[in-house]
Image (tube, rainbow, N blue to C red; front, side):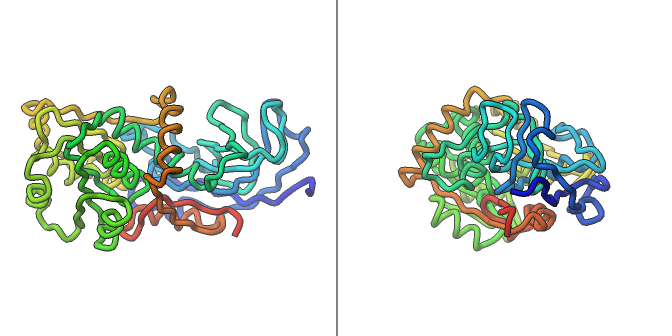
Length: 349
């Protein structure tokens, strides 16, 4: 291998407090990176990214605003970050060898990069027969988010009435399948008739509706939940959350994974929820959660999810973009009704 490489990377040139990021905010540049092992500090690696995960939360890292998810903002002119699957090219850490395949939760969005060999890295077992992409999907943050929301916070019981918004998305597709495996009745909402068909026929949802053609969300939930909602897995917030609060049962649980309908707005323009008082009378528990607060449960999740995958009880849909040049387009696609499944970039075309 050459002693230096030309590596493309996406960096932030301006914050995007509203709307979908464009080339005014994110730009691709090429840098020269030395592959000499002596050029990197101890306990660091040079890696070549193979797959890059594209997730809605990444939008909040470049808004320049600290509210909402309270994630640290990417600094101007810095490379943006994402989860990746990477191959170790050089190592200054005895725990990693050249050729190891790793999952990195916080990688630069770059073809090649130097990273610390920190605790957020984990190796992929070379004996694993699962496609590498699954470590960014069903066995990655999307699957873990669905598992924590359903298993830990939702605490489902057989026969529970479960509602999942953004049900065809990277997290929603797993949330519904996990709830079904717990014996629940599961209904999903999504943004197109095509995706309604997808989650019913492939993900096993009992029923689903297109929120764009249901002009009255309150009436839709009355139709699909005549006996009320026990668990609402919230991915969207806004009007849907307000409608749900009119249909919750006593002691309902609402795991709040995200609020994608609100990410592109400053807080003063976001949808207010007017009926929070219902949570008092119905003794509802609504809890936001981040994966970083549940590291002690990752082992349980991985064991259970891998078993489900091998038994064919959990399936995932991947939307693959090709080439690191597609990062801006793929990030924007998350906020369109045509998006479905887990969005991943295969770095080399």
